[in-house]
Length: 147
Image (cartoon, rainbow, N blue to C red; front, side, top):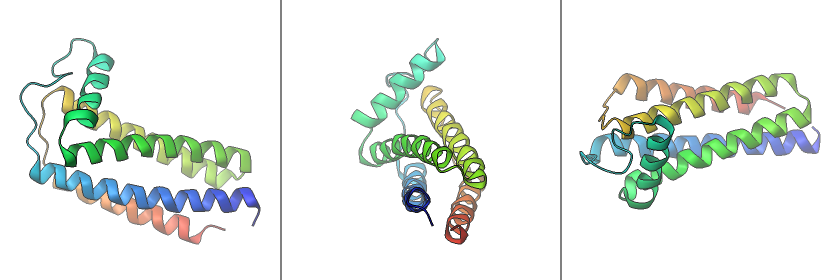
């Protein structure tokens, strides 16, 4: 296994661990956090401005569970971008595909969460939570069999 492949694999395993923490933090937020009716970014007329304001509020003033959830989400976005770059540099097609799909899924989940903040939308979807748990297990299995 080349050095780049080893770094990529370790990075993927770390990302799966952070994703698991994010999953647990998201469940805690769904169970224990009530979003206020009004906070920065709520009902903003411009989508991305509202998202930035809402996520900034969640990180800086959202309470410990919401802050942890938001910070881990931002960390996952950065990690997925870094892993995609590493996979391209390593030149492994399967890893490039896997990292691309993972990065798109993470960014999509981030926009979903930000939209919930922006629209004052409290969401208790256990099916989505179960689906995320299944994705965590699949990512772990994929990373474990690589290399």
